[in-house]
Image (cartoon, rainbow, N blue to C red; front, top):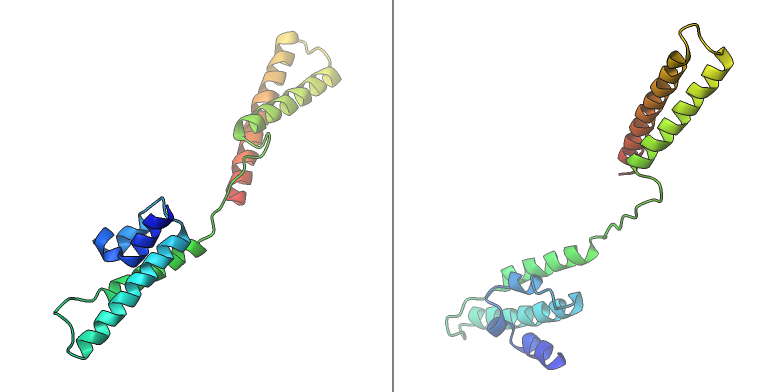
Length: 151
C-alpha cells in the first residue's frame, strides 16, 4: 500500500486526469490525498515558474485547479460529521402509545368518579376510548414537536 501511495505522490498526473479525481478516491485517507495534491501543486508551481522564464516545453500548468481542490479538501476535512443517536423510547410511535395509555387512564378515572351513567356502560367505554384517542393525538403532536426542536 505504501508503494502505491508513494507512486501516487511522486506521479499524480500519471494516475489522475484531473485534481478533483483525487478527492473521489475512497481508499485514500485525507492525509494521503493532501500529500498527493501538495506534490501535484509543487510540480505545477515549478512548471509555472519555468513557463515564466521561457523554459517550458509548452505544457499547461494546473496550478489554479490544484489549489482549488486543496481548498475543497480542507473544507471536506473540517466539516463536522453529525452523528445522530436514536433515543430509547423517543419515537413517535411510543409517544402515541404513551399518550393513549395516559388518556385512557384519565377516561377510566373520570368514568369511575362519575359512576354508571343512565345510558349504561357503553357511555363509560366510549369516554375511555375517546380519552385514549385524544391522549394519542396529544402524545403524537408532542413527539413531532420535540423531534423538530431537536433537529
